Image (cartoon, rainbow, N blue to C red; front, side):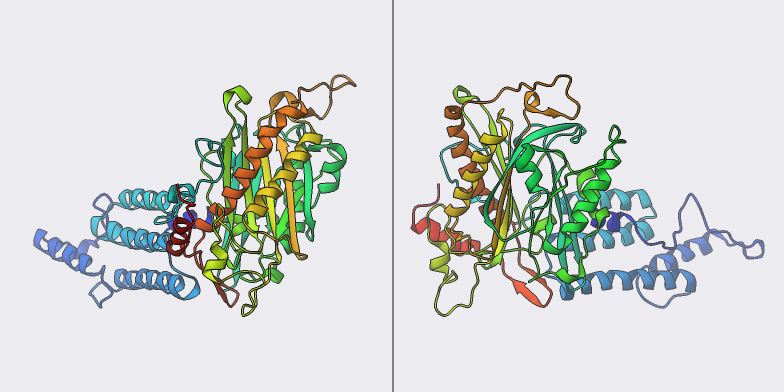
Length: 480
């Protein structure tokens, strides 16, 4: 959003428009030939050279300096990518269109087009795991192969990248578009390894429901996550009498690539992530809360996937979103990728720590109560294990699972003292267990496949070398 505003908020420049010609003093009226010569000189003023029109040339030079500074910042301060090139190209098109073509609306239109292209969910040249032939499991994914395949669910990101050291952000998962505080959803938490800070988890475990969006961010900005969620919730119509809000905020530590001690995430960033959350494709890789994370020694980030049950098993959807920042020995659909790449935990000549964390959000439209949601959350850890995670001492591995089923929602002020909600029996939950394992595994792969090499805070973390990975997977018959 900020980058888009940056593109569309062009700096003021001198414009000579046919509809608004410059005022000419009465004593210096010019002939048609003189006007034509003046237009030619004005066009020459587009280029950073000395001309007869000092005001126009001065503004022109300033604009070109701004463009060069953008290019310098792109190359020096962070690794350039297609998105960065699009920004600079957009600004260059604006200069040409606005000064030569004299049609500001064309420049703005081109700016919007390039902005939308540069912020499409899949960065140019990158493909998700399934598009590369990595398709773990036996169940079909949903149409988007994302957590947003679960009806009503929305996801929002705010990505913070500044200078040489800020590489962090916020990701918000919103279960449904209504007032979540008034219409809570059944939920449960499962802790794979508790070295982390999942705020709000004890009340979810105790009461079995979720009353706020789920926020993911970095370790030292959990407080800002809580503040943003509370402010957003209190401002919702119908919550005027609220005196207690259980904000759920998870984290991973992105301090290797990010100046985490600077605590750059604000409560306004959190509110923006919630308000801009939407259905549809979910941006993955180094975005939102995954901007500065590291996974298996490579660039990690946000990943998502989904699975559909066959109609005879209910036709339910299970969606997973992960924030990957952990280690171990990478496996991709059974292929020993980490070992063959020579980068893995306990390798004698490699100083590599498996510590970190992984936040896993599980959503389903199946009518599950809190007890079976906790069982579902536990199986997500099995999917994490399939990728090679060792859940080391310093890894905070948390799963929060919830159901969006309309009949299963928990009203703030029930009409009766007895609540009755439909819920699947235990035997019917087994297919959902398989679905969450598969979706978690693929979500992790997508977080790696969609991430790109990132520099920050004095370090550089390389993206997963996909050519080598595919060669290894082919060798071990892991491609489909």
